[in-house]
Image (tube, rainbow, N blue to C red; front, side):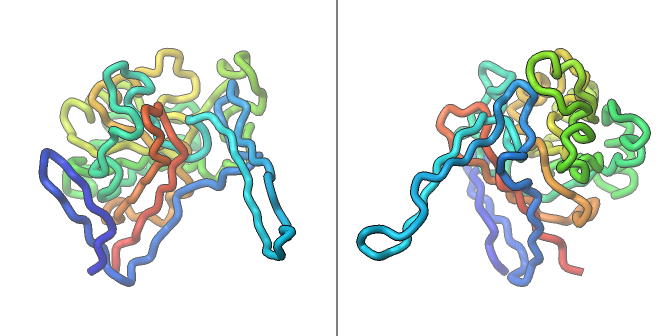
Length: 259
């Protein structure tokens, strides 16, 4: 067995093992000039510093980037909507590594771009899978990752600036479902393949507020979840460790269970 990662929780060291021949899936969108950010943000910028042969005869390349914390595939740290919440560097590894529970709501989202994943959807997963959403990383599959190259389809608008926020249309997690998870299911973290854990038309971001009050981190703009089963995959989601950060670019991967 290959140890994929370790975490510290409640003073105990926990190890997570996967098979040496495990198949890994990248759940991260590339960061480039087309990466989707909130309409009020300027987006990802990458500039060339050096690229070519040096006077001493060797090749050398370096670039620099600039970006908001929240954009592309990224981590929302609890402090993003909770004054006492954990910052990026305080989010413990046990929150970022664990078994995935994939909640597939594509059918509902296909009919309603403003769909909010409810407690009923979560109960349905538990009934079908014969277990509770305990000690897992919940990944919500709306199907919107397939629209990543089409900003208008992904966000509901291709406009930018403050006026564009009211035009956002994409699915999210219903605040009542967020509260139910926080109160009754000790999940590690929650991810979604849209731009926000709150649906596009949200004005008060209550799912953010509720989850972050309980220090449950969120992964947003997760890439294609189609290869992950409803349960059994192992997720490793490691953000850039920004001290005191409210969010950070995230590299999230998953190992598929062996047949």
